[in-house]
Image (cartoon, rainbow over all chains, first blue to last red; front, side, top):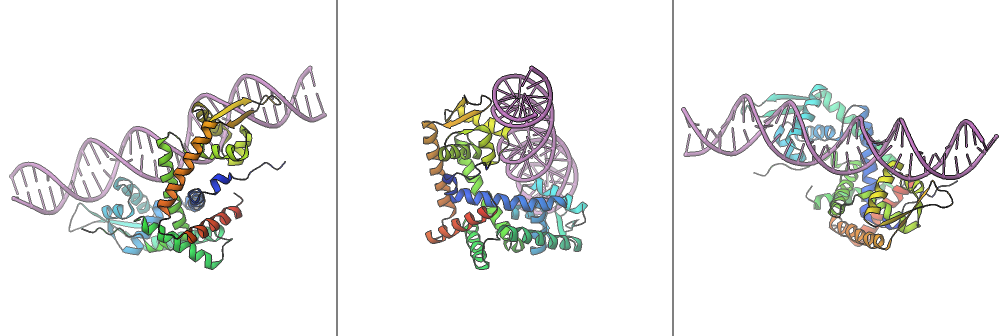
Amino acid sequence: MDQPTAQPPSLSALTTYLLSRTGKTARTRLAERLTERHLRLWHMAVLAALADFGPHAQRDLARRLSIDPSDTAKVVEELGALGYVERTRDPADRRRVLVAVTGTGRVALAELQAEAEAVQDELLAPLTPAEREQLAGMLGRVLAHLGI
Amino acid sequence: MDQPTAQPPSLSALTTYLLSRTGKTARTRLAERLTERHLRLWHMAVLAALADFGPHAQRDLARRLSIDPSDTAKVVEELGALGYVERTRDPADRRRVLVAVTGTGRVALAELQAEAEAVQDELLAPLTPAEREQLAGMLGRVLAHLGI
DNA sequence: ACCCATTGTGGGTGCCGACCCATGAATTGG
DNA sequence: CCAATTCATGGGTCGGCACCCACAATGGGT
């Protein structure tokens, strides 16, 4: 019966591996919930950036999130079709397109954040609240150190 | 000049996001080093499983690592071409192919583990040794709880 | 007025991971 | 001994992500 399903210890000993693995399931589970809404992770990131920092020229959006400008255009186009963002030509520099989140967009973002928190509760179930804070703090420091 | 590059706080507040992000860079950096050796992550996982648990029928390998059997065949084939594993028909059940790691394979695996540890040092640089232990412990518990 | 840089956009490529199906060889169960 | 099952394998699909180039519109500098 019981098929041996344990993971190789020589992998489990590597924090690189543990990080990659937990990160992947986090990403996958969140992505699944976004897919139900016909969105991908970049859509959420763009919405968040606009909500947090206000309207952006599309170029700046790309730079901030380090996405390819060409891909940014596609994501913004899709968000526009859903009514989550508005695009207007910058009157001062008519090359630029100013992207701003709409009310609908803010509502959608709030829902997405709720989804993310739900995933987080699933995932971090075995950790105490104090540990979750520690974890978040350490990950934050790691990312900060990477200049991300 | 200074382009605003800060990440949206409403994302950074989500541990799901932090996990996904750190996990991704961990995965990416390790994958880069593997690519230099014309390998991918699954190759390393298969080698590790064979080294830790001894020879496997290909099917069991697939079940243990939850890869598609078809993909397993391809990975094993590539490892075989490099001389890292040996495949022999199981005389007891000639449908099965027994896969075993070779001496060369063990050497290669050791090198890959060293690479992984190097990545780990890069990544976790801002953490104290005690914190790294905590981190590894927490991630281990999270994965265990997921039944992975 | 002219050249050059910037911006947005469309189109395309390549890689990877996950998946699925069909087939042939071998084994097992009734 | 026949039918159903298991295994390995080759082939293909699909979505996501990152990247790149070309082009058209616009703006800035001199």
